[in-house]
Image (tube, rainbow over all chains, first blue to last red):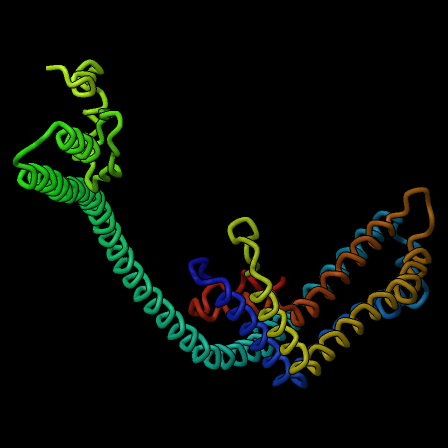
Length: 269
Length: 122
C-alpha cells in the first residue's frame, strides 16, 4: 500500500482488504472445510502408519519378527527413518495435489474474483484520491491567491500608515497656522478697539485741562493694562485682550521702568 | 500494511473513531466468517493436543518396543522428527486460514501468477 496515500485512505484500503478476505472465506466455507478435512486425513494416515501399520508390520514381517532380531538397534532406527521419509515423500504428492491442484485453483479463482470485486473499490478510492488531490490543489491555489492579496494589503496598509503620519504632521502645522491667524485676527480687533477708544478720548477732549488729561491718562493706562495711575483720579476697568499677541503687547507695558510712569504721576516733564 | 507510527503522527480522535467504527462494522457484518475461522483454528489446536496426549504416546511405545530402551535411544531422534513433521503438516492447514497467506496470494495474482512455489508451504 502506498505510503503517499492519506492515512484515512490507508485505513480504508486495509479495511477493504479484510472485508474481501472475509467475503472469500464466507463464499468458500464448504470448499475450504473439505480441503481442511483432506489435510486432516493425510495427517491421520501418517499417524496411523507410525502407530499401527508401520511398526506392527515390521515386527510381524516374515511371520516371526525376524527383522527385529536380525537388525541392530541403530540399523533398525536408520531403516525406520528411511521408511518414514519415503512415506512422507509419497504423502507430499497428495499435499501437492491439494496445494497446487484443487487448493491453487480454488484460491486463485476465488482470489481472482475478490480482486475483480476489489478493482471497483480501488477505482472508487482512486477517484476519491483524485478528487481530494484536485480539491487540495484548488485550496492551495486559493491559499496562494489570498496570501498574495494579504501581502498586497499589508504593503498598502504600511503606505497608508505612512501617509496618515504625514497628514497628521501637516494637520498639526496647519492647526498652528490657523491658531496664529485667529490670534492675529483677534489682535487686530484688540488694537482697533484700543486705538478707537484712545481716538475717541482724544477727539472728545480737544481742550484738555489738567484734570481731564489725568482722567484720559488713566483710561489709556486701563486700556493698555499698564501699572500707571494718576492719584485721585478714578481708574476704569482693565481692558481684556482677546488675542495672545495683543495680550503680550499689553503685558510689555508692565515691564516699563517705573520712572516713566512716575513722570506722569508727578506731572513732571 | 500497518502504518509506521514514526512516519505517521498520532491520528486525531475523530480519525480513530472513524477507523474503529469501520472495523467494528467489519466484525459485525462478518461475524459468521470470523466464528467459522476461529472454530477451524480451535479444531487444529485440539488435533495438536490429541496428537501429544494420545498418538505420540502410542507411537513412542511402538518404537520403544521395536528399538528398545537405552541411555540414548535412537527412537528419540525419530520422535523429534515425527513431532516436527506433524507440526509442519498442521501448518499447511493454518496457512489456509491465514490472512497473510491470502494477502500473499492476492499479490501473487496481481503480479501475474509467477513465483507460486515461493509462497506455498513445502
